Length: 473
Ligand SMILES: Cc1ncc(COP(=O)(O)O)c(C=O)c1O
Image 1 (cartoon, helix red, strand yellow):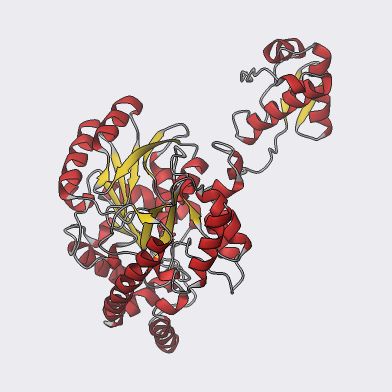
Image 2 (spheres, rainbow, N blue to C red):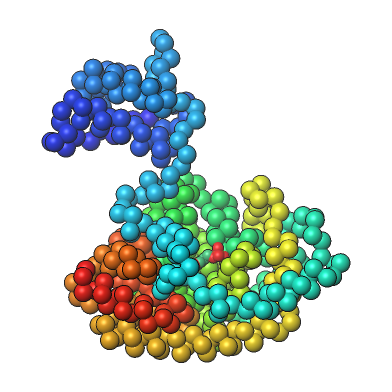
């Protein structure tokens, strides 16, 4: 039988109604987080009363109300049981209960749901007019014309071979050696990490992330019931002393990171940090997920963990959402052959087949040379936008953590005394979506930080609204 939590009700609640509500809330929370599963037997009235430090009549009332709400069921002569159909999993209820403004979903939901006229310096992708729309349309037309592409069949389990071959050649440019049979095509970078978590994690396993890190890592890891531990991030990668200590203390199963243009800091892993990190990982038999979604923003490749390790303990993932198309939904996983085999079975189990049409489309754009030209143009435009954004932020007293050598993000501290969440809420009322620091922080230690996407900062109204919000916050 699961042991229920015993927390003293707050003084103001210490009335009969307050005690009953407290017991009900505690049981509901256990059911919502699945620590009391369907069919689990609840403590008897007497035992429950002892556990919660309430009277038996309070316990009876709590159980009766839960039964009336069809949350639990009384079985005469046997006791009370959790009903077999639990409430759906609510991710926002997992992990610390935070103000909605610092919830990892906040920036994504606000950015995706924002009316067309909103400005989105907090979002993590490029504006549509920065993407190679015409190249994609041309590739779509040619796909429609050719009979070679199946519009009706499932693709192969690993995914389109010529695209996997192309990806291995691209990876070789950053020193990652993989054969096409070590590459699995999936629908996105997010699905890649989800499959890896399904493959390697048990609920309760510890996963290390950078602090700060991409907020959806936190959301996804919570969905997998992982214990998340943050490692402070420096301009050259994770703080290695903290990393070594966390590895020794928590015996993590995974570490998830970005080596190039880390989200949100824009930092790039240094060679020295990469080598020491791999040594610690090897000694502890730690698996690393290297999410390389920003690789195509790079002019000069930074060190890749997957290259140092030869894809033994590093799983390398990527996607084309940031530089080609977020609508197409395509991603990939490169890993050791036996892991690719297991991941392929999981892909079949959870989505049956991969993105066959999207793979044809992406391959077509990658092959014809237009993608390389698009990247050259985008990098120069981005470098100019970065410089301009930095200058405009500096006028408001907003200072970057580092000067990134490329990419789209500037991770900045607000002027003394300002709370980024308050500023983000005020700006949202004026139609500007910002990304307050704590959405990226597992330890919630970035209250005065904010991430800016230089590609989304062209409109001067971003800075007018920001200035007004800073004055009012
Ligand atoms: C670091 C990082 N990884 C993965 C993703 C998600 O990519 P995809 O669209 O391929 O799921 C993002 C999107 O913002 C990201 O910033």
